[in-house]
Each structure stands twice: as C-alpha cells, then as structure tokens.
Image (cartoon, rainbow, N blue to C red; front, top):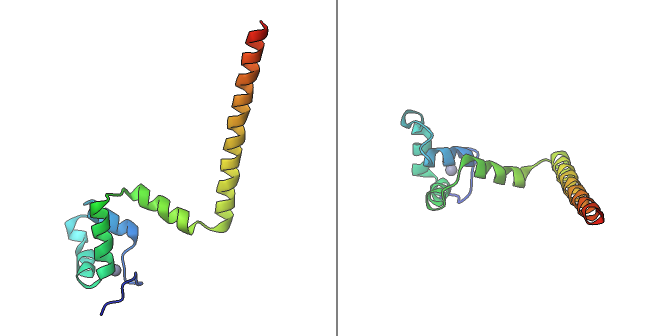
Length: 104
Ligand SMILES: [Zn+2]
C-alpha cells in the first residue's frame, strides 16, 4: 500500500506541471516518469493537471499564496493597501474634477 501523499522523493508541483505541459524534454523526464510508476499521488496530480490545465504561473501563484512567509505577506498586504489608497485618491480627484466642471 503506497502512502497517498507527497514524499520528499516527489517532484515539485511546478515540475509536474512542466512535465504535463511538455516543457521538460523527454531526455530529461526519465526520473519523473519512473517516479510516476511508483507514486500514486503524483500520478493523481499529473492527471489533475491534464484535466484542468495549469500554467507554471498558476501553480507558482498557488504555492506563493499557500506558503508565503509572514513578512512577505505583510509587505504584499501593505502594497495592496497602498494600491487601494491610490485608487480611492484617483476617484477623489475625479470627483473634484467633475465638481469643478459643474462649477464652470
Ligand atoms: Zn510522488
């Protein structure tokens, strides 16, 4: 009975996506193909990517969302917050412009 989870021998999700997308040359994919003969979990993962095609960027985003270190997360939140402030600043400026147009 194989353990139905990723082990330390498992290729990363990124590698599996690249393999599924054909981005890894056949000459270099021997290890992955061998791994897939003995790991049900990675077979399931590759089958998932086959059914729901993902780009490496998609996977990276998910990895980052799940494993982003706390300081980076706070930085990202701060940046998003700043962006939001800039947007509301723009909105405010538009409203002021509109108000001054009416005034003219
Ligand atoms: Zn595996």
